[in-house]
Amino acid sequence: MKIMVIGGGGREHAVIKKLKENKSVEKIFALPGNGGIAADATCVPIGATDIDGIVSFARENKIDYAVVTPDDPLVLGAVDALNKIGVPCFGPEAKAAIIEGSKVFSKNLMKKYNIPTARYEVFDTPEAACEYLKTTTFPSVIKADGLALGKGVIIAENLDEALGAVDSMMKDKVFGASGSRIVVEEFLTGPEVSVLSFTDGETIVPMISSMDHKRAGEGDTGLNTGGMGTIAPNPYYTKEIADECMRTIFLPTIKAMNAEGRTFKGCLYFGLMLTPDGPKVIEYNCRFGDPETQVVLPLLESDLLTVMQAVTNGKLSETEVKFSDKSCACVVMASGGYPKSYKKGYPITIPEEIADSVIIAGAKQENGRLVTDGGRVLNSVAVADTLKDALDKAYENASKIKFENSYMRRDIGQRALKAKEVK
Image 1: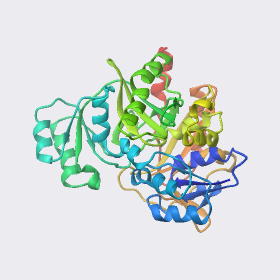
Image 2: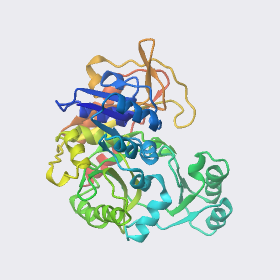
Image 3: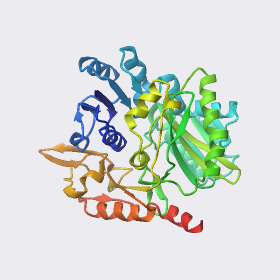
Image 4: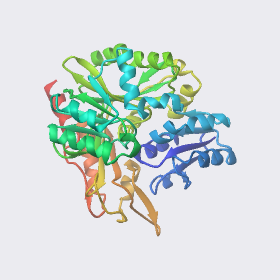
């Protein structure tokens, strides 16, 4: 069986490593992949948003199954285009991917179908947004409507920061057309939880919960990033809360999308806040999270390809999806300066004995060597019986990896450890 995985980051590397476990997989192509993925798949220099190029490659190479992982190609209709030429896919069609592609759509969906979320207002002009902000309370959350590489959210502590955020999104266009409309939300408090889920549009099967660490600095300070590390499972996400989320959020979302004629098949990601008033949705993603995937998939005991095909074929209710009761930790090693400016091209040294536990995110091959080529360069991932052991192992392995100007947070998982102590 020939499989094509669209994308080129750490999430895709984690997916490819898991897909390789299925004996029926003869070859995996990664479009475009990266320098580390090249050890596990054949990388093809076709960009993730080059839909025509992806379709041509799939047709010419007689691809049996495609996994479209990033948000951009999903929103652009990669699954629709591949389905049109008879290639079955894991991932939602464009009409369903809008749940991430437009914050305005998703907020209005939740409001219409009574799915718990933060109060919000939508603005099409900077003037209207600024006038509103002069009347609201702080902190406030300001979000670009469209896709922004996971960085289109600013938590404004005061009016000056809020006005600056509006200017940067709507006037300076730091996120391009994605900031043409913005959402201003109330600031929610409570532990955050990420829950990825498999769904075929009828059945929904949540995966192991996880905790992301978005801020660049230790103690959750500094700018928002794509994620500096993750742990799973999330200790705040109890069985009681999981049951409540299934009843008030997960199933209602699937039903709402069906009611709107936008049936969702693929991985639906729920970013949740466990507020004093109960769980609320912060955001939806139409795909596997990054770096949440890096801690969730290592705990999946069922065969990933079998589950994905069940999603595609509407057979999820007949398919076992089983997870280990162990813990997993992921520590991101980034380029110094990320998420702002950073230098690329530094050689990376990874000892052979730990290579299997390293997920490459932003690196390329240059003159036979792996060199840095992104902000988030790689992930050190470890599974153990306890969260503490998983974290110790992930950090121990990270300490053996070398590249110039590297940076990582040293407090990944500490909040989770403290939460477990309280219990």
